[in-house]
Length: 93
View 1 (cartoon, one colour):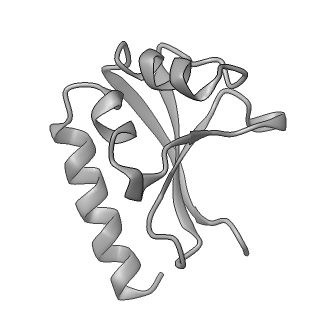
View 2 (cartoon, helix red, strand yellow):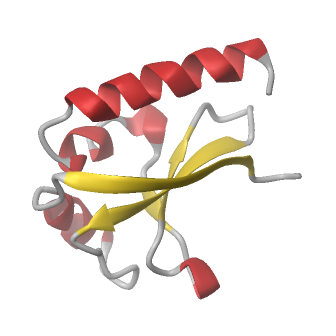
View 3 (cartoon, helix red, strand yellow):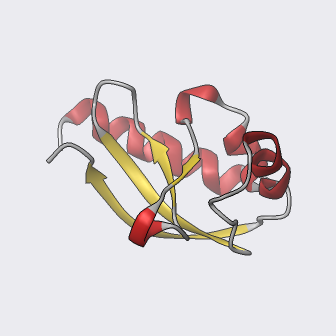
């Protein structure tokens, strides 16, 4: 992965580790925390920059239903205090 993406990855992981809940991450528009769909419907993605294409795929604990509306999604993030990072990948490769 490019150096700039690697730096963003480390900064993002550091931010996640210091967050009280997933809501802290959801409130930062740059991260664009969003639910995935289809076979990844229990997973969420955190972007590592708009143009990089890289993202962190996570599973929150407790699970958040991907069918919730945006306002409900942010509200549900307040109860998430732990996550599992499943992968870091380039969405476009």
